[in-house]
Length: 166
Image (cartoon, rainbow, N blue to C red; front, side, top):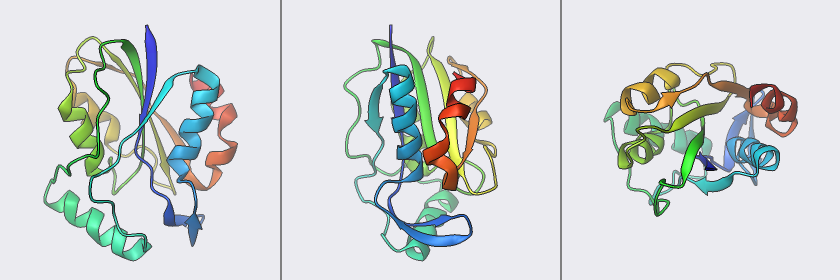
């Protein structure tokens, strides 16, 4: 069976190593690319239909409001099916102790029964938060394995961490 890397990532202004920096490629996308080279898994980017603002502070306000409302933002697209995949690597940045709400939308769209979900997140000090427990709650029929937390500012150097994890 095949493997899929489904990930949410954000470019533009980001908080990295204590500074606001403009990223042409988001930290989670960078990490997902490394994982793809190691596994050969298919890649799918989870993207909200209405993207967050490019400005970091505006983005934070929008994302926090989504979380407060427990929103499920509409996504641009979904994989046609997950039937051919037995393992899904799920990547996302840590947003206030869990996943961005668009990742909740993605997870609730599919039945993950019988699938293995291997979560990984990028963060700037908060690790995985409650995201693994949230995935287990949303996907009760899946086997959710131990997650990997990668410091966002170090995403480009995360190959050794992924090698140990996979």
